[in-house]
Length: 370
Image (cartoon, rainbow, N blue to C red; front, side, top):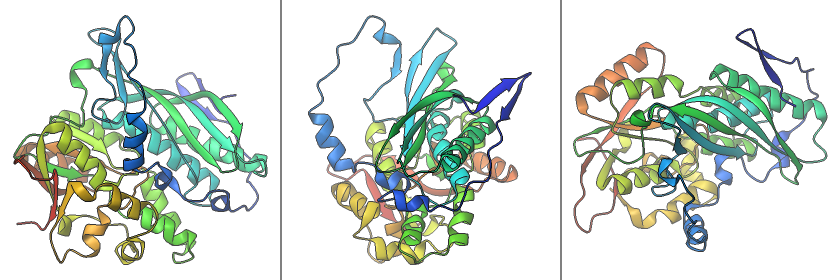
């Protein structure tokens, strides 16, 4: 049953009783997108997946798996295309409504990264048997509320029993076929703009280890739950050449994907990377553990790292959940993009640039600003 219903142009969320105190994070072995299969294991798995047979009409598939983009795009006609994605994560915090919002914002972000707008979603619920019904309802209500904020509706979903807790959305959006923004297309000379801070993974892990106070984590999670809708709309307006959202593979993983897909090298200025409060002090302790450590090992052969960058370089490997957009724009467009974003209350920074790919060079260089 859907938790929201569109009536007379308005989205109404069914009231949910205040749930009893319950530690969601005890129902999962890790938090958020740190649960993703690491990039190296994913590549090995996909090597065994047989190529699919293209059905009639496959030419309408504008974006598939060829560059590991954020979502699939399927053209309906010359004016309309569907954006299709799914994402679900274990809890990042113990507030069920906020967890639902975070998981939903994370899934919706894939549509925004393609330059689209969400229309409808289906909830994906893997709930342990010991999860109280009011808690489960609060999670779903949070997700439905965040979808409504994005202009979409949760129209149903599916639930299964699971020893670990997961929640997320399968989202369908729309985009004009000629205005799809892909993770390929970055051009030499483009500036790289990031629209949210980094360090979410370190803070979530720190909370689970007892090193981060709950009020600090919740403040961070509320910032993480902000939609990427304004950044998406403005990157399309200013003609972004390429974009992706930064999630479980960290800034490094998603930047490597953009560089390879675009046949450029990306230079990231680590001294310009924005960080959530308290994150830099935590990433060094996570350098060899959890999602950050897995990302370091998975992308070790793809990155050049200058000496002396310390925690700022490690920050680039930290897995994010509901992270910002990484967009490549021509310099003048990038500056106008940032100015307009900041005027609308969205933090954004130029964190690097694209340059020609040289033979034998790795696709990503972590360095300092010139």
